[in-house]
Length: 249
Image (tube, rainbow, N blue to C red; front, top):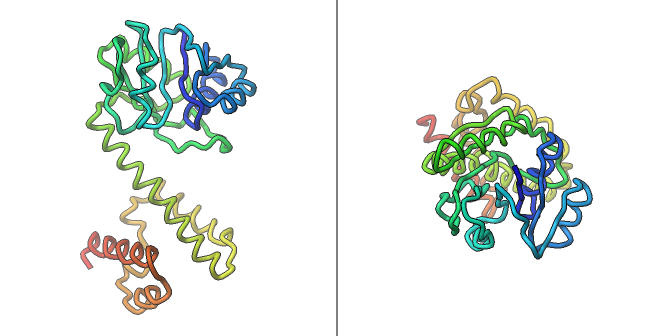
């Protein structure tokens, strides 16, 4: 099966790398950023182009959500299979006379960070059982965790991921701002962060909660509020309110 990956960003790079490492042929990586495409092509030895889209049986679109529809129009071949990798878009966002599907990898991607592809969950969605099997076989070649999904469920998967990943990472950024303001190396907090994450592999997150809010320690809460301002203060108040509401304090 001829497969083409469209895009040159983080998802495109890692998906192409996962395929190459698992001996899944990729006929071409296509996009508009020539410099990034050439980097990926050079590292993974995949033909690349910014001008001509190769003929393929499967096209995987790995671009930003707002570009998916426009990019999908570049595919003019009929009766091929096209999959986007978005967690928040329906398959009918794809604008062409071809079979439409979704191949959503549940992971945060950065080109400089190595990943264990075998443990990345892939959620697949297609219009018929035959295409579902094509996507399942493809994803199973690189991951042990492949699950069928629907658009309605995928929206909640993506929402959960935003809470569990994007919001948490933003809190790390805010925490680093505080430590930097007092010239405290953020590295000191990495063991705490590591243990917090490891703990939820063994304990339900709700049972693992610690801190002044769950203890309803008003003295510490008030002291911390006096040390903060602007967005960080609002985040602190909102998070503590949410914790106390969850535990009915």
